Image (cartoon, rainbow, N blue to C red):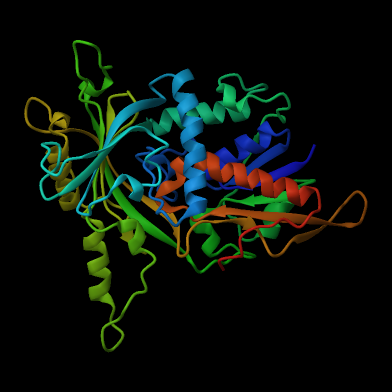
Length: 418
């Protein structure tokens, strides 16, 4: 049995740990923020809307593979877990750009895919084109609680048939560390560690031994509200208003890869403001499964990490735009029932997520044998706002890379993006 250390306990860290344990490995998670730290603003996982709505373009094959795998797993989860954890809903995407079925890579993957006529009443104000399909949303607190319960239990039981295993590793251990200065210091925390999985997200910017300058935050603001009618299931005599609707202007996801141009004199303030305003055009209504709680968003402020206090004017803009998309979120008084206003930092990376074996290994002195043992590194970070919907696909690849390292074979992986 091999000992694997996972650095970080965001959604990638947890899912990687789940898949590694499922393959029979002993897994230890080392992190500053743990899954039950629901009010930590230092990582994005607790604040996410968390649905399956792929951002991958036709050319992004790796991203497509990750998202497709997760969709397939979630399809199985939805059929076996409570609708308080994961729910199957109607999705509508509104966009100023016209798309045919051939332009949407997942059109044959999802159920009920169709392109709405340009004149349909379902189109939001200012939008010209829309697609609809059936997909999944999750309740982040409930989903995380389920995932952690499977990590900590002696024998995971509440897993769908596609995730069954006859060789589960031992329960996952969680270690909290206030500081994590380097890959080496992390390896020293876990005796016998053979491979480390780096899921530190934004921490990879400063983590000694990684120091990836392509890593950057995308600050996002959301509003969590209560909508009791969204708890109800549709029936032959009742059409449930619970649905997921997303509207974008220019894609805030692609904006992060644009090279910033500065004004004469080096002042790039105007360009930064243009990026933020462009990102603010995104609006989305994402039910947290069938809990009756709904995430409204949002903003995509590329490169911004402060202030971590909600902008009241932005909250008002979010509520106004989202209530136009889905009027049913309003109560009888014409207002929304606000639970909280949230700020989170999405761990993005110029050039896309890094999922590969590190170019260096950590040499540690084995106290028992007095010999130096080599600890390999697999990187798994930089997915930005797509962490949940790509989680099982990335974890599948992380397991493959880890087992190739353990077998001592040089794997064929993508060239490093650093």
